Image (cartoon, rainbow, N blue to C red):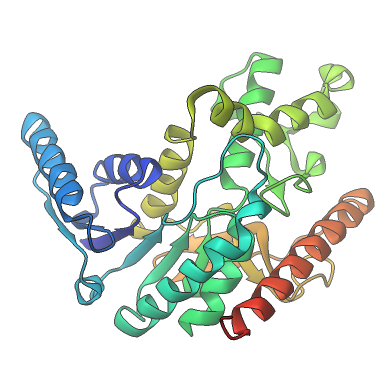
Length: 318
């Protein structure tokens, strides 16, 4: 049984992620964590959850806090706190404002819950994963981000609809930035275990159109309803379930890589990784030459932004 803490539990994503996580059988203790001044809201959210537990007969210890010491003993700390993205913004527009908050939060987690795994959700998630790794002092396997996991699931759903097959028959993934330079691995995409290049219908697959839809999915949802909630929330819960169940699934998350993909590395970015109770372990892979070029470009972009943000964080306040 395990304890999970959500930092930023008063936000839309934090609240729905909490709701989705309560369905995981391995969970025994859920902590909703927020900043000082949000006590009444946290108490209200907790009370609402307790009513839902009563309705479905769920026996789970749930608490809320604004005291950092209560994070101690967490198996997973999920960080959703930060400035939300608005319509017309890209994720990197939020980088420095959120980096200052994440640096402080990561240092707190590293001091109080150093044996936990820290899952970053705050955008831009690849850069924030690097900031969290730097300021927490934790091992790279213990700090990871949502990365392109949700993007991969979005592409999977689109492919399943195009071929009119059950979504479970489709296996695909997107690597690189959780953003405009994301890279679909068509060479690793299969349907029913068959490479899509071996399916006659593949010649009609509108690859560019599908990727435009994936890249714009978040922006379209934000423009129409104000924020993305259910997709990220369920994606977070999937990662938590994988960790707590020690499932050793290969999922595409933002993780620190050295040279696992064609000797490209020294950056936190979305890559296939084996995920279990002890952390995330990037999987060395070989991909097609055009995919290597695109991935190299994506890593260079994120590395440059990350370097700039880390340098600014070290500058004295003016």
